[in-house]
View (cartoon, rainbow, N blue to C red):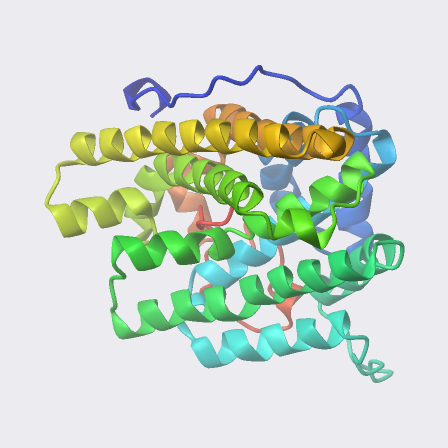
Length: 350
């Protein structure tokens, strides 16, 4: 579909991390150890998606340890998002809430010890591992913000989507745009820039209107570009949570016109980011050592997500039949639910 898509404006350079090969090996071992991917047919699909390349494009300057860590987070978010988005689970708000509450217990440190004959769902095993490796060394205000973003993604956003699917609700563009930054977990990913760059942004910066604008605009660019590239596959899967689909639905546009409209909006958000970036650096020259790597992380996210979207088979509509197979990426035990009709599709996570 790439040749048929309108150009997406992105003035940032292509880059990749030199540690990608190591991270690919790490992901293979980590997903086996945690049980996220263990069946060979699922592993082949997982390897084809090449999440190692993705994280290398998004974090081109990270050291090997940090690249492995954020790669694990990305994989966990992608795979859990797929399970929550598609199939019967994604259309059952009550079942989604049950899954999310088990994850909340892990985050809050109150997950009960498993019974001797109980097998802990792989997603919970992996989340506990991620939490232990990420959160204890971070500042208290970062932990609070990161926890809020993660739980907002897992609760409000996912149950909102599941409720819409169950009730046949088509959200407005305005509501969708506000929710999209949470349903894609992009705030969770942007928070990890501080871990990767080894910086700690004070609350005063996070509350600065210019920083908020830059962050919001970069998040929109990433999410909407994802919607453009996943649009055709999501149409096949019957997914309504896609900006291109909503533009067509509410404005009566044809497919090409809707795609061009969203790409124009991506360009406008990119310019909004650049304007906020200039103002922020001009306003806080004393914080340049902190702000430059943070803003560079946002730039890398916009560029890297676009580059990976152009090459990954994840959004290939010709492969949509694979998602009729239970556990195309992960097994039914990942979330501790039995869903014989689960379809792990494009989703509208990142």
